[in-house]
Length: 326
Image (cartoon, rainbow, N blue to C red; front, side):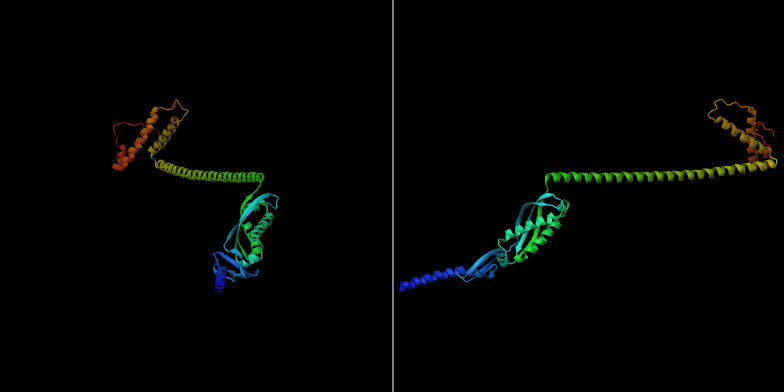
């Protein structure tokens, strides 16, 4: 009896140890486990130490609750303008509800991958090639919105979907390069033409300003010249008036001064003529000397009258100066 009781106690202890071992479950951080009782979901165990009923409950699914990355393989997409391109990408998702992710969909990663690839073809196929290459952000947002809405019932949150590479065919790339070069050449020609136009405008404006300044200078010079001629004419008129008054007063020396002055000016003009090499004087030299003497006598009389009274004109220096006959 004692031996049978010992065996029973040993079996009981072994079963108790196995039961305790099966009842205690440790869930690592970032994971959640679903618990099933007779095949039916009853609860979810969070990170840490969990207790279940041994031999009745069991762990159903071990769900990774961290954000995960899913590579989207390359696939061919036909755009709206019938251009075929190779497209690949990457998707980021996170499980928010372990129970729904376990029991609402089978093979969740495969389901998300196929859903993403299908929507990539749908969204990118509705766009032309130029928009496809220049509007990646809009494409990413459109695909993300559609896929996230479709995966919400599965307890999954799509955090980001990115298109990595868009590879058009080689001949299409060459055509695009030629188009880009032609566009750049066009812009360069337009800029060059605009530069030449602005340069011509500035040059014409500068010439206009130069002409205006030159005309203004000529106008000012003409005004100054006219003013000088006016003053010279005024001085000549005053001189003629003074000589006329002296003649009217009976001063013969004024007549001599006037004639001699004009005579000398005429000789000066003949001497300065560029065509005159030999000057023929149809007059006697004594007349010229007499005219000069008359001018000198007028000067002596003027200075004499100013210094010694009215008898200054009768003083002589010992040299006889010929006079011009009235």
